[in-house]
Length: 166
View (cartoon, rainbow, N blue to C red):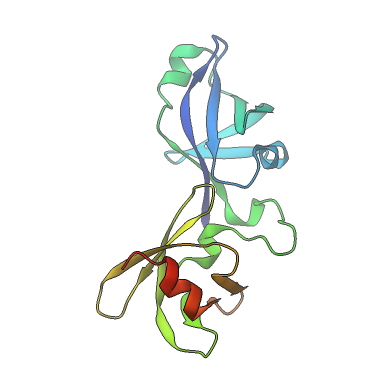
């Protein structure tokens, strides 16, 4: 099974076994379309989903109370890749772009995308050919194009060098 990490369990919520999840998706609403999740390789059927303040609150089969939910704290929420909700045009899963070549608009290879840190503006980690890691915000004007199919991300060379932490 190809996996996709879509969030992390923060803590139990209430006394009935519900868990509070920080989504790694653009919106917690995407959790409403998910029927099952995996936590540390164990499958759980999603019985209920509610959202608020950017978090998803899940009720899971086999998690009847706060004590059972407490055991799930800090675990990554994983779904099979083929069951991932379809994203709107122009959106993509981080997993789909990791390993992409980062090139300038002239086609110059800068390195590969080795990590994405989620923030108000995502922070990309570029791994250069010499092994050096360079952080930069994936802000508008820096990232010009994302070609998920060919795993190529085109950057504005000028803007990249203005914002990159070298």
